[in-house]
Amino acid sequence: MLSTFINKYKFLLTAFILLSIAACKGGGEKTERIEEKKEKKAPLVKVVTVEASDFVKRVEIIGSCRARTVVTISSEEPGLIKKLNFDKGDSVKKGALLLRLDDILLKSSFKELEASYEIARLNYDKLMALKKGRGAVTDFDLKNALLKVNMAGARVDSMKAQLKKKRIFSPIKGVIEVKHVEEGEYVTPGKPLATIADLSTVKVEAAIAEKDLSYFAVGTVAEVVFNAYPGETFKGTIDYISPQVDRGAGTFLIEISLDNDKNRFKPGMMARVKLIKERCENCLLVPQDAVLDDVEGPVIFVITPGGMAERRSVRLGETENSRVIIAAGVEAGERIVVVGQRNLLDSEKVSVID
Image (cartoon, rainbow, N blue to C red; front, side, top):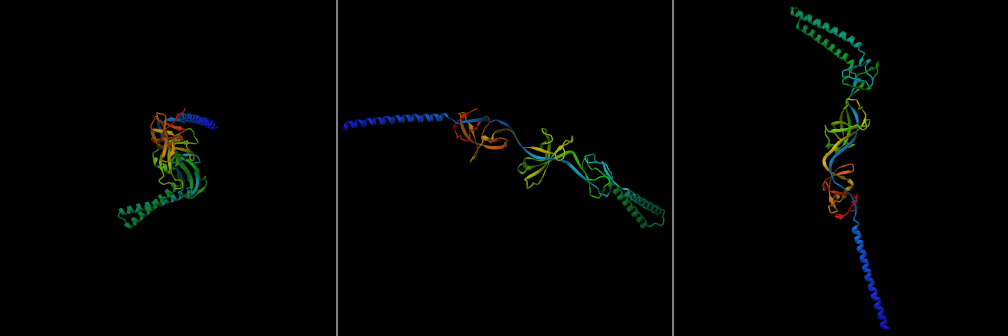
């Protein structure tokens, strides 16, 4: 009995050992196959080759058109408008007669003053002749007569100036923008008569952000696109930058001059102003999606000749739409990962797909 039990025990023990060895062998082979499978499944990535190209950074702002010079004409003298020589929208030349006020009473007074002046002058000449002929004329009489001549002459000159102000002329060449009066209307001193705009040159007013101010100066070339003329670009120059910031908006007012010899630009027209903020040649531009944010700064994965993903810190420059300048860290001709880079490890083997 004892020997039979011992033989059964040996048999079972031998079977258990053989099964354990088989299991270990099978598990080892399975592990090896998993590891081999893992090695074959390298991360799939898409890459682009870094190339040097020209870069232009533009600032685009909204502006509106204004006349370069706007003058409001008013009268220095009161009176009834006797003749009106303009209407709204008329073009006028510099020095053109705009209107004439009633001057009948002033002309009558002027003739009277001229007569008084002539009498005073004749009296002075008479006394002077007597003085030369050794007549009974004192120096006081002669001086008094001369003063009367001067006083009469001053009144004539004053009245002549008043008469001249009854005729109002255009101080500039331009277009009648606003007509404030009508013929037959009585005007008082200082009352606006007409507003004249010189449109031979116009200005586009816009506002630039305080952070961009240092990039521009008087004389900077600007491109202007008007909503009224889509597809056309007009060139002008900045000729004024406000010395004071608008504290509410954090902007500076600028004015851009445009020649308007064809009279295409009208006051109030809206425009888009494009200014070149920065320009560089042979810059390295890469898609912004290729750049990852790291606690130590931006990084990019570069594909080495051996097919490894090398993690590199880079220094960034200006952005343009969906691209960014790489100022340092990558060279032209290198390939960088643009898809699949977020889960990569440094020096990890990758598989590049088209």
